[in-house]
Length: 137
Image (cartoon, rainbow, N blue to C red):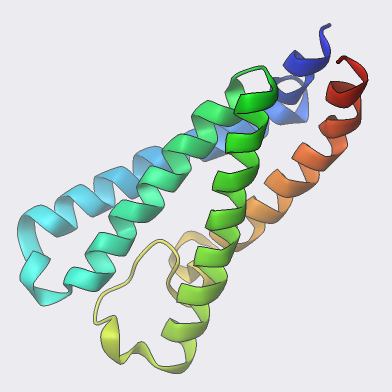
């Protein structure tokens, strides 16, 4: 097995599958929110769309081999972690700007806190597979 394909094998396949499900769920949620109620909570709905985009980028980058894809995945997963921590804290302590939930609201409470755990697992997986990728250069 090549060093760069290790990222999308074994536990990496499950991680990519979960990212794909969240990409689909966040995209659908954002699409419906923006199409039907955008004027009620534009910030929340735009954040849902941003989260969807982050999940899509992370899914594709985690599935692709190569150093560039790894860097993109690392960036996307880091942005995801910062987003869920920031939006989660804001919505937990001052939900006034968010009259409707996003994927990252209250640290992903509406999704069983998976949005909080997922980027941590993603970063750990990227770290675990880093050594074999670096050795393959």
